[in-house]
Image 1 (tube, rainbow, N blue to C red):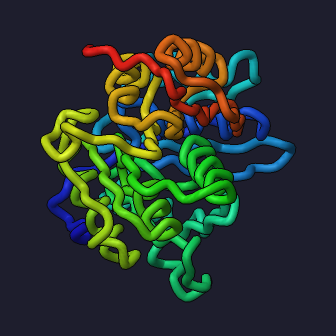
Image 2 (image 1 turned 180 degrees about the vertical axis):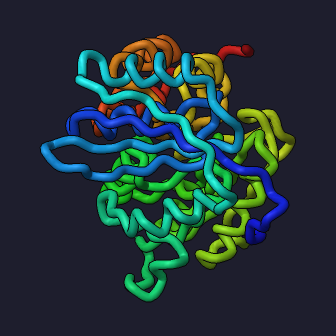
Length: 305
């Protein structure tokens, strides 16, 4: 990403103080919201078990919408006043990644380029720069997916892997490094496609990770896909809508890792996939978010739509 300069527009930061127990759920909700889209979300401990959560935006966000989003995530937590302030030009995504540091999920260790000299390179070490794409292991949904992958690696070695809505490419890259086999990753955002391809190159797996621009599985490269493992770290609605396509794309007995779900939403997705012949293998709960690990049954239904 090019360096910012004086001609670039100002950005905005929305900040709210909350109890430490609610801060991560609020931050996750702000980070996952599609509109307004947060460039970065950061924390600052201000003492007495209180944390400031700040979300950075390219355009001034709606105070009314942010208030509703934060109150829905915080439930009955005692919140401070919401502040929305303009900021001078700065690469807040890179700044947030620099401040956060490496994070571990199972055996996987994710770090940014700025921490390259602080970690030991290896099969489970991932160097991921977010740019303007979603997906770092700091978010509970991504951590849940990596933990699920780590568990699966202890049982066997899936051969063909799909990652739908890849974002930064972190899940596709983790699978390619750990398994050594081919991975196809999709995203409907061309910026995310470029970021994921660059992250795959930086991690030495560009030849094994095919990144394509597509909505869900709508791409010629996936027309006859029969995968052993599928990742989809999305949101409730697309997971419900894409369930039949996922069933068609997976072999009998294949595994499906689904995330992007608040704890209260997970039951709807599990029921949808059970109706298609999947069964629940494991459930991972992290900071108010659920990751589901499902197995496609040998007699799963494969509907046409």
